[in-house]
Length: 427
Ligand SMILES: [Zn+2]
Image (cartoon, rainbow, N blue to C red; front, top):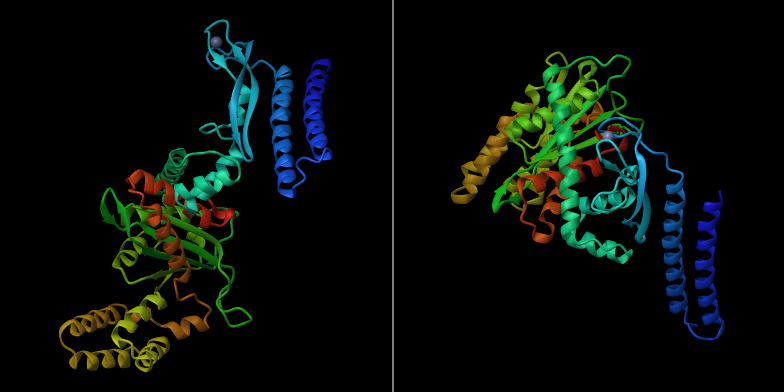
């Protein structure tokens, strides 16, 4: 106890001295400016943190019990104490940690430092904040924001940190996916199953190793009830998960498999696939779902509207007409109208209309919007669009020339940020 008292005494003396100096300066009429007072208070608080951390680690270290040697399991012996810099939220600190040594195999250990869980010298709360920033913003901007809070971490260090942690999470995901793929779907006893489980997918563009690639994004969510809510709207999305990867269609399909298995898809009443019209969702993703679960396929309403807008070519009244026909499910009339437009067209316009016509023809049986909406289904992939936009903006930010590993790591970090806490794999 006496030793702790000594440490506290030392701490009190150092802080008292600093506080006295600042107060005397203010009293003497120097540093009367509000900004200067604020800076002095900050400086004092900073000093207090530093001194307190040094004293606390020093005191706690004295009572640290000797661990067993990880090599030979014999009790280790106290060896010395080491000073280590610790970068924390609010600025740099220095702690003093006891080091132990095994007499038998000469192995060393510093258990309290290991328990602290530093990554690149940063304590876990700072790591979490830095990763959150790097998920949403360029490494350069993350560096500038952290600098404003007294944390000096270079964009290079932030990039390494994000790549390291993101890659670990990708590995963790891959292990979980491999386990599910090996086992197949199974009921999760005691776990309720979603009445309606949605899978929405989309892609976006990113430059990786100087080539344009198309990372893919899947958004998975549930609604707690079948049918519309009391306002006649589709029930709110719950348990939203976002997946994003540079991987191919089969990879995305496997990731979706793991995600829906965790939600007990085998017992689900219905799975709803909402896609932009790219064939891979109907081919790859639909293919990995359990065959016995009812499946509904919907062409994303917003993607259809984009195509119809191309056909209408700025004619607002025509666009409204086309949209109305599509919404009520009058696909024959819609197709007739598009064919009539195409007859009158030539050149580039003919090409555009031919594409739109094919799009509607291919997906006409996935367009029953009015009825689906009345039954409380979500028919638009607005949520996946918004996720794709955020993911796309992040990988475009700062003009980073991505490696495949780097982009996958950062996509995973941002996808985790966009995922509800309760369904995050890492949770
Ligand atoms: Zn040993």
